[in-house]
Length: 275
Image (cartoon, rainbow, N blue to C red):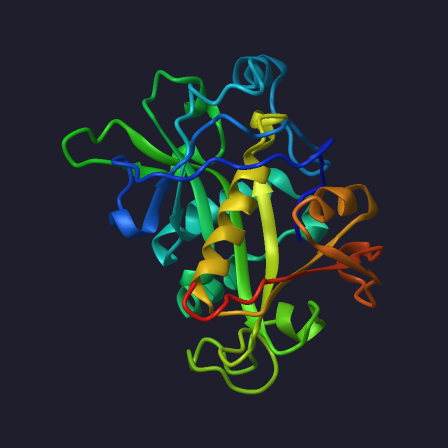
């Protein structure tokens, strides 16, 4: 489930440009312009970091010049770093299991997005939980690691809201990678069900969750693969998602992680012919 975030207001976002730092192709990677992002706070009841680390990484909250963040599509090769981020961000009863990460990043990796920062061992980011699982960003500089700092993990479902079945693994997984039955990813579905929006607690207040979510919405809108995006969130985060255009459809019937979730839905604008 998305981690609790709050933001005072949404602002216009800058265009994204290609980044030279990623391991993926230019078409799958975008660098982030730091200007134009408003600040928000990550509340992480399940994650913790030392006061010194938090102070070092949280300085100049609106300034991302030390991170040079870029987005890229996640893959099964990222499973360890994704799990590390999930565990650092969420309380235990709200975490996605490693098996579900493997399933989602194997079955529909194109529906998940990561926000990365390239860093060396002597930089503050090297003290974060995800750095230990980061891969070299360039074979000529193996000491510089492409470190995951925020992520969106999703599957498709046929319901207009997130359901219990959409959160589960297929009964025949992993013996079959094909979609069978109503559980798990539904390739024919037109709803993108977000199961995790997470950002490192060490970067509290830097706007990373907003950056990765805005980038995700832009990508899904341009892809034409879905009609809407759905997720579950607690009351403090409703306003954050409403600023993106999500609508609150009321309280969810799901009791995952103790319940108390709201069904949030973003209807993707239909592209006009020729646009």
